[in-house]
Length: 201
Image 1 (cartoon, rainbow, N blue to C red):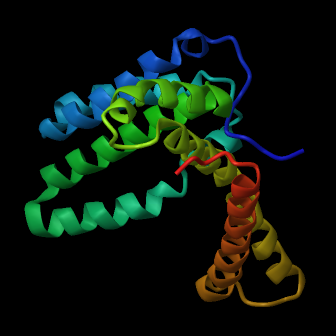
Image 2: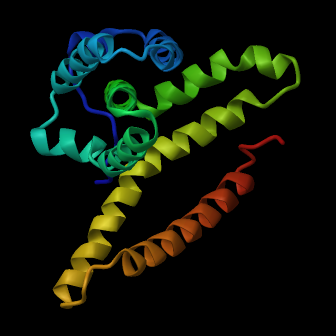
C-alpha cells in the first residue's frame, strides 16, 4: 500500500475544519515573521510541537516527516548568526520550525481530496477574475501532497540498494537516480492528466 501524509484519528485537531487550519497557517506565516523575540516565539513553537505530537504519530514517523528540514534550518541559523547575531539566528530557527510543525500537523489531519476541494473553493474568487484556474491549482497541490511520501520512500529504497551492493552512499549517486525517476513519473502523470481531460487550460 502506498504511503500518504494523512493519519486517521479523532483528535481535536482532526475535527477542526480544514479551511480554519489553512487560514491559521497563512496567518501564522505572516505574523511570525514580524516577531523577532525568542521569548515570544518559543512558547508558540512549544504549542505547535505539543499539537504535532498529539496526532497519533509514532516517534519515528513524527521525526521522519520533519527531519529533512533540520539541515536547512541549521545552515540558515549559522549564516544568520554569523551576519546578524545569535538572537536573530534563534528567532529564525524558531519561526521556520514552528511553521513546519504546524504545516505537518495540518497535512497529517486532512486527506488529499479535502485539500484539493478546499483550495479549489478558496481560489474561486481569483478564477472569476480570470487570474487562474482553481481546479488546476487544487490538482497540483494534491499531486504534491500525494507524491512527497512516495519520493521519500524511493530515496530510502535507492539508499538501501547502495548499501546492499556495498557501494558508498554519496549525495550524487543518490539524488541523480532519484531526480531521473521523479521526472519520468512527472511526465507519465502529466500525460495521464491530459488524456483524461482534467486540465482545461
